[in-house]
Image (cartoon, rainbow, N blue to C red; front, side, top):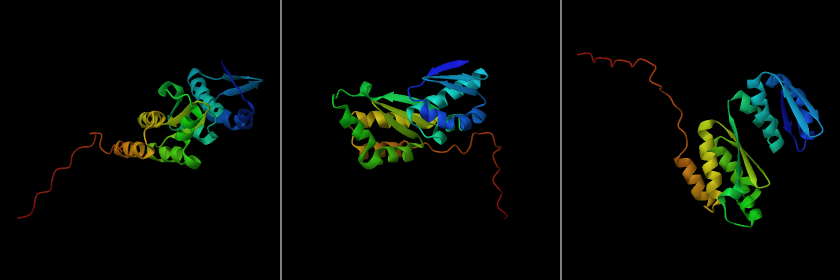
Length: 175
């Protein structure tokens, strides 16, 4: 059994009935503590999903941690800037009307949420690296257009051949 601290359990209380069957665990909420009971692997996944929900992610994005084997990562933007004006740095990450986060999400196939001086990222292990780098570049002052160009240049290409199929022999031309 794992016990997690929870700052705001009201959001979690609303979705606990949906979470339990999908995560194969029993979740109990008491004041500012959340207890998870199940097998160790399910408890670990449930912990990550609950952390993502507590961070502010919507339920479907948090559940992608289990369904799609995605990763949840938190980036503390204070670690990557010398600026004392954190409000301006957060504004750069969010962008005008949320356009920067939306564009980053489209280019990296990751979900982003910002809470205080932290940015949460949920995505596939291959995509997380690009999302992490993009956030750091923006926090350090890079122009958004340059970050978008970087992401377009470094987009992951789908793997089509793993070398497991037999190669077809070329057909001989009829003479």
